[in-house]
Image 1 (tube, one colour):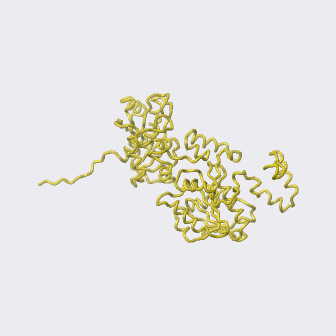
Image 2 (cartoon, rainbow, N blue to C red):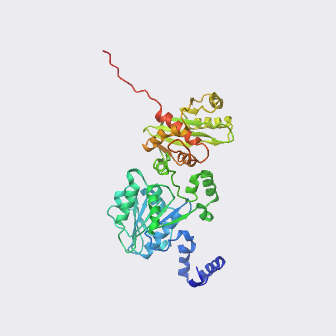
Length: 444
């Protein structure tokens, strides 16, 4: 604010004014005052000025994106009784559990008397003044073909289904139906992920039709449990994905990388998976105890023929007996059928330390005749073909995969992709091992 706009208030003066305001209100106004979003929201949680068409809040986990989206929908509904609002999430389950019934969802914001009535069977919310909001799933893009809307709130577009271009088809159908009212608008709340739809919106920022608010998890630290902050720091640490999941930064892919962020998002799974028919633990031993990590990856071949990464048990700075014990513990925990260990660094010693940790461990030693990146190329092709899944998020492993480049080089992080190399050995054992096919031989 400049002097021409009026008096310039210091933060202390603003805080003192905020304390005096309630005293000047009547009882009805005092009852409504705590629900005024602009009084409690951080500036970046409020809609920007200007004639934007899409406002995308692209920020770290726990930033307050869901609350901002729900409050925006509430303000639109209260101001426009004729509003018809689309609520779109990756699935109807998530739309209901997060956008509607969640702790920061539409049934939790605003004064109780002005909250909408939720009709689950109709996937609809009706506000007291007549405004309505309808739930949609990005997994079913054709359901947005036909309905008309004046506004929309799209949640976590970074995790919308990518197969068969569902995410972009859903978005395009939504845009086609956004033709009610004078100023149709969309609010997007998402963690940044380098998927086509997010990249498309970032590119449209140049013409002013898309406004982007960025922010870190730490911006909302005052409202987050210390245990949560400690957990995300432990989970992501100093990884590149920490920049994405905590700092809210959109990570661009390295040119020529064998794996892309979009591909890894496409192969990610959550929840129950088919029973494994075979489990292996792959080990890429370090050359010493001061530098590289010992890559330890648990993977399984499901009864559906899909190989899945189940766990990353890698360890850094461990002596041979220590990383061997980590492997033995993992083998028992996951009931591994085989432990595959690269023996280029250490030769027979690798097998000896593994068997010393557990003499019954089924160890298979393998020797690399090609470099790490060259061995990785056929495994990257398996990912592209849909033969591999990640059961959850493996930040450090995925950072390394995205640093492996066509042509044999590695762009980091770190000096060696030990976790990625262990994964390559696991997938080679599960999907690329030589298999003898039965043949019928005729005798004349």
